[in-house]
Image (cartoon, rainbow, N blue to C red; front, side, top):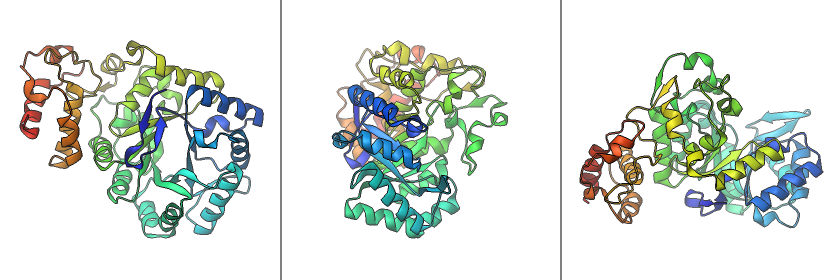
Length: 382
């Protein structure tokens, strides 16, 4: 298992994380078996959006004696009322729900306190200026949560949140289809069939700006819906018009800027095994570039996907890395100090480009690599 640092938090998380759907409706013995396999496979990060008390209790019991081996991303504002899940902004319910969560998980803290499901600007303003954010900051100061997170499907809301500097971790829906959709307060729009009837071209600029801003500000991203709820794995259900594999979806998410871990919704031990096996899969099975370039309803023409097909460069330039640093700086309008430092550490930089064009011939997306290297050399001075 490979591990990544979750932005500026310093927390190390496994690339492959575990969504909590797999624990729902399971007996304690089944939950224990899943946690055992997570531990043996090195899966360390668990998302806990569900407020189901049985899930919380079963997981707390299963974590006995090994709590320190796992990073818990537990959600504030997700509570259990009248036998069902409820999203709330009532501070009394939020406090009661979090206390219940800690008790059932048999712990006195969680690593990530995730403000749950903020998809409208009005809701974000309520959270930001109200009791919920004050409570989250109170919990962080007391050590009951290690850092403050926010979950959203809306890039406009997410961007506003990370720009405040209050949010350390963003849980966001990342996959090749959702990345083409503009901001909306209605999460159903992300996979509405009507939005995929025309030929879609290139990533929504707000989504790209979001990922790049998170990278620049040190906000770590944990990914939800990497498989589009499973739709992307089915040729008949995929809005792209063609199925992708689990490895391709995972690799796509993990190559976006700022992404640290993908919360895989494994509902069976077999699905968990498939996600864990990504770590040992050959690069040819992870490669999403050829698949994306051949999708009948979508085109990323001229858009760098950081897929690495441009390699090898005869001068040893890591073209994908240089392009990512270039895009981060262009989005900012200047070169952030952290980006300049990371660029300076590259053994071979853009100025070494001899404009041979070998990379452009290999690029599935028709990116003007030579022009990007010229711009990078001018921007970074080397």
